[in-house]
Every structure is written in C-alpha cells, then in structure tokens.
Image (tube, rainbow, N blue to C red; front, side, top):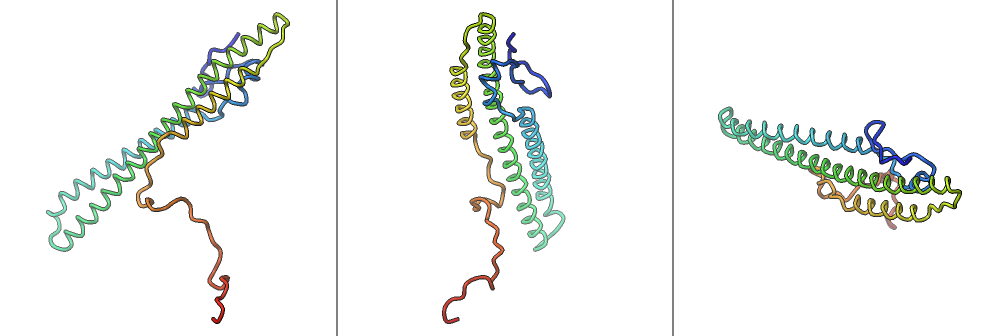
Length: 192
C-alpha cells in the first residue's frame, strides 16, 4: 500500500516506502531537513529582533544623551550612539533577510518532497499492481517526472531572494584569496 507522503522522524516529510517508489524518486529525494531549515530561519529571526531591540535602546539613549553630556563630549557621544544604532538596525535587516531566504528554501523543499511523494506513491501503486498481475513495470515515466519536479525546485531555490549584505561588506565581491607571498618573493624590476 502506498504511503501518502507520511510525516515521520523529526517531523520531516518522509520518503514513501517501497521498491517502486525507491526506483522512481530515490535519486531525486532531497536529504535536507525542512525542519532544520526552519530552525535556522527562526534563529535568524530571533537574532534580528534582538538587534532591532538593541537599535531601539540606542535610539532612546541617543535622545537622552544631550541631558547627560554637554559640548564636544555630548556631540561625540550622540555621533557614536547614532553609528551604533544604524549598525544594529542594518544587522537586524541582514538577519531578517536571511530568515526570509531560509523560509523560501523551506517552502521549496516541502513542495519538492510533496510532489515527489505523489510520484513515488503512484509508482509504488503501479509496481505493486505489476507484481500482482505478473506484468512488466517501467519506472521511466516516473523518473522523468521526478527529474522535472527537481529541476523546477532547483530553479525556485536559485530565484529565492538573496540575503541583504552584511553591514560594512557592501563593496566586497566575495572572498579575497589568501596570499602567502611576501615582498621578498616578488620579482624584482630590472635595474633595481
């Protein structure tokens, strides 16, 4: 009997059991946990809220600061609190955008698993019928459908909104390669 996309384990959607289902969707089933993705999204959202709250605290202190310090010291304190506040809000925005991206990934994984479950259930049903009737079973149409569903899911993941850049990292275009070269290792210019 086909599994109707049963949930199990740690709450993740489980791959349908059976030989027909395994032949049809086994190679396409994602190993990633949608619950783990949700945990990451929740952690980012909670951290974003903490940074936003910290920004609010700094904003309040900035308003109260002129009452505490006068002159250059007061101006410097307000400037520093403003800088810290803006950074806290920017980090909150960055982490919030990571939570949104993770939510998109989770939705895609759940959609993929649900679609593959339907394909696997149908394949398992046909395989059992073929076994009972002693007729041939072809898995190719199910594999083709599973490959299409997987391809669409990969496109959806690629189209998910990327996280906003980390504050202060706007101008970087990725990792800078490490270099162990020192001045003495560089070739000398002729005549020097």
